[in-house]
Image 1: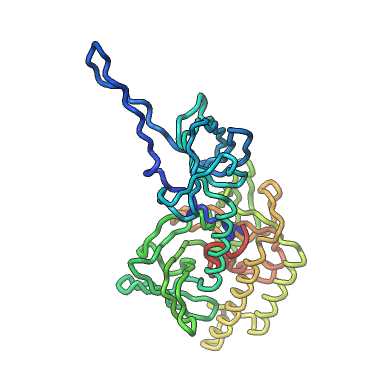
Image 2: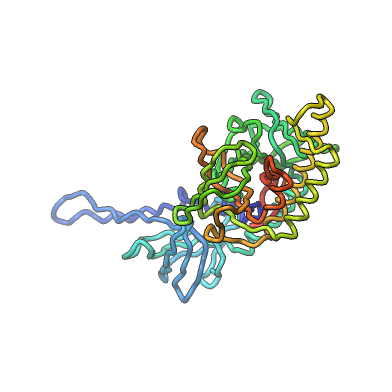
Length: 394
């Protein structure tokens, strides 16, 4: 699954556009004929990750995805900026030889003769080693001070959000200083998250929060909150169109036909058979121990409801454990899937009533799990809770 081990580029994306617009020099007035001065073209910027460097030429992958060839002119100014800073006053002088593959750069200058060439007058550099160090520190902080789960309720007046993590209730307290982010619709990557608000958070959202925990862990004073709205689907593929990037399936839980868009951001993986059998046996054994009933199951009154909740809780727990393993499963492509394959999917909620969603994670090889859980697979989206800022795998 596309999880949380990120390069934190949303925090290190060198968002300095406003600081780096270089005004072109104004030409003087014509000596004989007064006329408006013609301004030189304003400088423009490109930012991205260094892919290769040869002499004074940098090949970079721009944030928009295209490969750009940058010619660094001999008079170009090169500075190194500390990770996380957006203030050029904190930059220190650098040399072209400081630039290495994997570094983040913001180049400012003039477009070349083609859309993928660029002449750089200034290069602002963030070293990949510094980014990695900050990433490691933030991941450690998330592990130490992070919590995650499913939103139970939101109190807009107090800013308190109650989440459920397994069988535990945690109150996440927010203030005007809390940094809210929202997952992109087809991605759970930290760097793809957008600025968010408390008002966007709804019950059943997935939530991660980082901040000071109470001694018993029941409350958190949140410095950062990241949320998203996702759903779990499971069933056999009914149709597949690899060229269009679409599959359809009848979801076991809702019994509805769903169209699933598979994009370049979707993480498609195959579960090894021995792992699938292990989790199938685990969830089947848990259900058997509670009479095989789930919440909303047949008669038995309160006792049946309690047993169903226990079975559901065990199933969710197994889903949380499985979601932590997905990053180690082999990556496959849509072309590797075929009609009739059993899949479990984490997707965005899509447009209400449209029955079309965009996949975040597609997991195949899950036949034993769905056989053991005929009313729906396990809750893979639970991996979105508890690992914020990058605990997990890319």
